[in-house]
Length: 349
Length: 268
Image 1 (tube, rainbow over the protein chains, first blue to last red):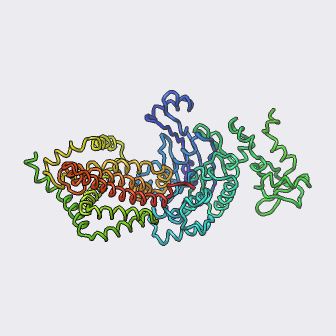
Image 2: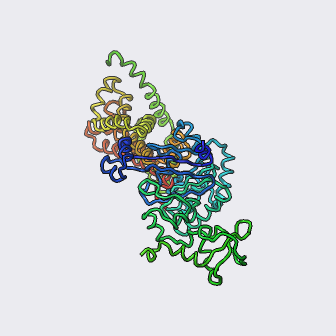
Image 3: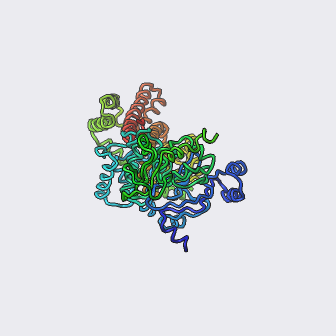
C-alpha cells in the first residue's frame, strides 16, 4: 500500500531495471544475478551489460541528473523511460502507468503525449525549416496545421530564435540547433522532458547559457526533467538531485551537495576532487540552525558558498534567512572553509 | 508452356506495350522544336546556369542535323517506358528490402543474377514467349536496368541518419510516418542516383534490344555494322551517347539541387 501511494507521486519510477545487449540476455542475466561483474559477464558470454539493477525515484517538478562517463549506461538508461530500448528485466512506471505493459499503439500515444526528448546530436529533420521541426511532434500527434505553427512560433520565441523560423537547420550554429531541439520538445507540452547529453556538443560559453535558460524554464514551467550528462559540474549546477552511474549501476544518488560532501565511492571522489566546491555546496547543508543574534547581512538558504565568500572579507559570520525573510540561523567563515577544504588531496594526505 | 500460356503472357504485358506506345506517339507527334524548348528549359531549371542548357541544345540539334531525330525519339520512348516501370517496381521492392533482413537476403541474389546474367540469355525466353517486337525489348531493358535502383533505394533508406530516425521514433511516429516523413525525403538523393543509373543502363540496352525489334538508334547501329556502313553506325552510336549525356546531366543536376536543399552536401 505504502509503496503504491509513493509510486503515484513520482513522475518516473524505475525498479531493478537491467539491460543486457546480446543474443541471449537471459543467460548473461543469470550470471549477473549470481554476482559477476560487468567485465566478467562480457568476457564469459560476450554480452554487454548496459544497466545493472537500476532503481530510481524521480519526483515531479525536479531536474534529475544522471551523470556518468561514456560507457556507463546513462544514454541507455534515459532511453528506457520512453522505451526506445526494452529492458531485460525490471519495471518502469511513468505517471503511475507501467510503460512496459503498453501495447505498441499505447506506446505511441504515450510518446506523443507524455514524454518529449532532446538529443545530443539534435536529431533535427534536415529537410524541414526550423518552425516545421519545432512543430514536428505536434504534427505527429495530429494537431491542425494552424494551431501547431502558432504553438511552434511561441516556443521559438521563448528559446530566443525569433527570425529564424524559415531557416533550414544546417544554416544554424550548434547552439541554435539545440535550441530548436529544445523548443521541439517543449512544444509538446509534456510533463516529462528527457534530455540526453543535450548540451554536450556545445561550446562551453553557449552551454553555460543554455544551462541557465533550462533552469529558468524549469522554474516557470515546473516540468520533470531527466537530464543526462558526463559533466559533473553541469550535473551539480542544474540538478535538484543527481545520480552517478558507473558500469550500468547507480553508485550514489542524492542532492548535489550530499554527493560533494559525502562521496560514496572512490570513483565519485575522483570527480569531486576536480569540482568547484564553492559552487556546488549550498549554505543550507552546512549552516548552523537555531536562534542567533540578528545580523544585518544575510543570505537565503539556497545560496551557494561562492555567493557567501565575499561577505567574509568584512564579517566573521552572516545570517541565513528562509524564504519569508526571517533569520533561521547563521553561517561562519570557519564552517565554509571546513566544507570547502574537506576531501581535497592535501587534507586526505 | 509457350503454346498454352502465350496469350496470357501477352495480355499481361499489354499495359507495358500501351505505355511504350503512348510515350512514343507523344514524342513523335510533338514538333521537334517544342521538345528542344522543353528539354533545354528543364536543363535550365535544374542548374539555373547557361552551360547545361547549351549542351542540351547543341546535342539535340546534332540529332536533328544527322537525321536521327525519329530514331532518337523511339529510343527515348523505350528508355522512359523502361525507367518508369523500373521505378514503379524497384522503389517498393527497395523499401521492402530495407525493412526486413530476410527479404534482403532473398532479393540480393536475385538482383545479382539479373545484373550478371548476359542479356542474351533472357532475351531468348522473352522472345520465345512474346515473339520479336517491342515487348521483349522493353522487358529485357527493365530486367537489366531495375537492379541498381532497387539496391540504391534500399541503401538510401537504411543509411538515413540513425539519430534522426531515433528522434522521430521518440515522438511517437508510426512506421508509415517515418517512411514518408523522414526516410524517403532523406534518401531521395540516393534514390535519384539510382534512377540516373537505371536511365543509363536502359540506354545501354538499346543496341541489344534493337536486335529483337526495338528499333530506334540501336537499330541504326546494328544496320551500320551489318552493312559495314561505318559512318551510319558511328553517328547513331554518337546519338545514343548524346541522349545519355542529356539525361545523365539533367538528372544529376536535379540530384545536386535536392542534396543542397536538405543539406547533405556539406555541413556548415
